[in-house]
Image (cartoon, rainbow, N blue to C red):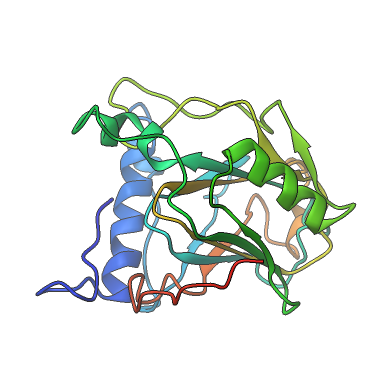
Length: 243
């Protein structure tokens, strides 16, 4: 999915971004069940709610961002812990994406300098500088800074999605931050380093018990992609003083 920044002649609006996301979600549904494609963008604003149709069980969802945006995730009216939702944050090199690498073999897999931050609910951001560090070092530092809720893992929370028409998919790079039971209602991830991207993964471990997850709505799990997806490229984030 591509969007135009605010400095372009025709910048992509927040509503257009939401619409593009739904198209991408529907395109990713296996062709054997085309009628199960049910993603819609109804709110005309910068958020997307992903939920199951009756009788279906969404168990995993991954968002991929290589454009250095600040993205906020939440489950409506639930904490991640109450919704039995595990989270993983995989910091990756932008140049490691096959789709990008196909344009130029000279792109280096390294940080450009900047920061990665994680904000839990309305707490102060947990910020790690990135200059001269590997993705593994960044992930390890960030996991330690988040505290006992998080850990660095050399095994993925679930296998990375791959297919023949790869686009921006990539294989697992050997490390990610895992937060299996976060007692918070939102998490905001901000990658501000042009050499990096982030894969944010959610696994719904109790999807077979939907009544316990979200009220009494059977077979539905909702994930809210909100925050500064509205005006995805609203403004360049200012340089951060390194710690």
